[in-house]
Structure formats: structure tokens, C-alpha cells
Image (cartoon, rainbow, N blue to C red; front, side, top):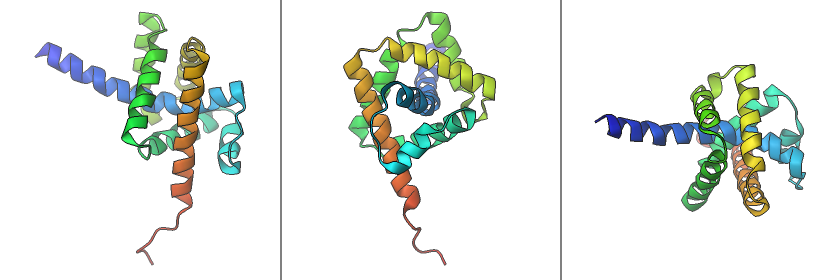
Length: 154
């Protein structure tokens, strides 16, 4: 039973880590690669600081849900691979920080971003580029959805 619980916590923790890190990565990668984006996504990603990281996390978390299931799995696998480059202590700290989710304080968001930046730098260039493409797509999908007028409401 302990092993079952440990396994389910591991899967849940991975999802939380992916969602928290997703937004932080938006800011980090945008600074590293400056890939051209549409104007709205560019406005979001050019913002700096903790508020921008929180906004990126929110957009990424919601936008991830809009990706095709195959791309969601690909995104998760890329994050998992990046996290494996950290030491066991760093991975545990990243998991602990990720469990804070949107309730993370500024220091925790900063620390989480630093750990993810370290992990992402260890990824091969082509995987980092693919991760960035998926993140951009998720943000674009979420921004497009937010722009759509809601129907059926007065």
C-alpha cells in the first residue's frame, strides 16, 4: 500500500511540477532564444519579474489543457527529462516547490525558476527548442481562448 501511495504521489507531483514550471520556463526560454511570437504572446513573455512569472504559469497551465493529448505527453516527457539532470536533492526541492503551486511566495517562485533554468540548460538544443514550441503553442491557445467572447451570457 505504501508503494501504491508513493507511486500516485509521484504521478501527482509530476503534474504539479509541470504546471508550476511551465510558466517559469516561458520567461526563461524567451530570454534565451527570443523566438518571434505573435504580438500578444510577445507582450506576455517580455514582462519581467515575479508577476510575469505568475502570469506565465497561469497561461501555461491553462493552455497546456488545450494542447492535443499527444503534445501534452510530449511536453511532460521533456520536463521529466530536464528534471532528471538535477541532483536528487535538487529534484526533491523542485518537487516541494512545485507542490506550492499558485500559492508559492516570491522567493519560492524565484528558487523554482533557478532550478528549472539549470535543468533546461542540460537539455540538448533540439529538445529545448521543441519544448519552447510547445510552450508557445499553449500560450497562444490560451490567449486566443481568453479573447473569444463568451456565448450564452447576457
